Length: 199
Image 1 (cartoon, helix red, strand yellow):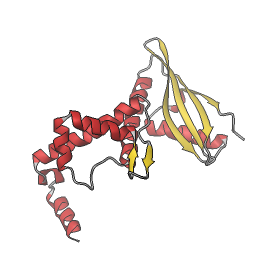
Image 2 (image 1 turned 120 degrees about the horizontal axis):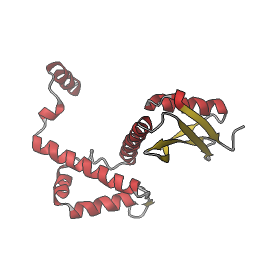
Image 3 (image 1 turned 90 degrees about the horizontal axis):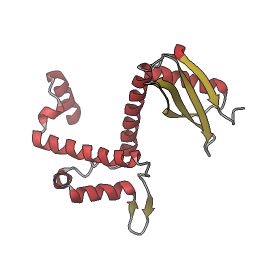
Image 4 (image 1 turned 180 degrees about the horizontal axis):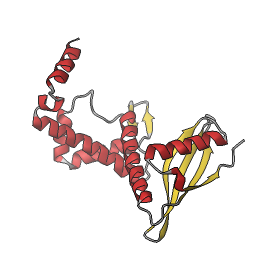
């Protein structure tokens, strides 16, 4: 109830949480979170696995992410100071946080691709779509875009989505939803689907 009242008071007075926290602490926490994101970005860009195996005897996870982050702490004095002040319940190192940061990075890349398509030499582009079924009988669908930019043909993967229904209508609906989500004009595309496992 106390937390609810505090939230209510901040909303009514227009006071943000950042004004209630010491500026130095806030800056250290931001630097810490940025460092976590930088390690994740490095591993993703280099196509390296973040998570590894769990050691039952030592009761800890052995992963590239954990090892690289610990190495970064040893090399960065400012980050080492930040680690000392970070609350134990807000380390931002969990798999859920890692996945969230990866999704944010993926969305940023997709937005850049869409801007590139919208500024292409010609407004027409084609869609390349393919799927792979996983062990849960779901289709992991990659949607790529092919277009001409600076007189060169570019082909890039825009997104990878999961589809539970394995039929042409589901894939079409998924593709049109991706177009809608990212602001691509569906009147300018040529559709090409390549899914061998369609019923």
